Amino acid sequence: MYNYYAVTDPRGLAPEGWRIPTKADWDKLITQYQNDEQLLYAVLINGGLAGFNVLLGGRRLFKGEFQYFEVYTTLWCASLTENGKYSYDVEFDRQFTKSSQRVGMRGSGNYVRCIKE
Image (cartoon, rainbow, N blue to C red; front, side):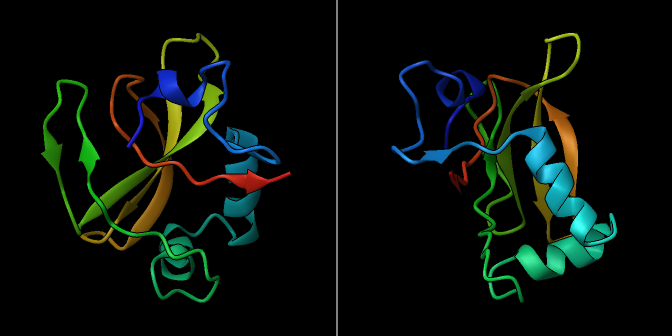
């Protein structure tokens, strides 16, 4: 798990030839599934049709507490909101069997999935 500051560190978190997806990258993927949060969850979750295999590893709150192991997970986007105050992430929630983009706290701990350039 990483906070947003690690994701955007100029030394680079992603290995050479890879990068952290932006909000636009996630928007493109979400659009491929007709903006259907339940369909997106079904194809991207571990064992889903897309082979993306998101694991529900929980999350770390900005104060350090861990929660929602095997129920929920979030993946960082390398984008900030227009006012620069918050970051974007994508959530996967087993309780509601959905996946969606949301605005998150930069100090929280989320997972990272890289895109090959």
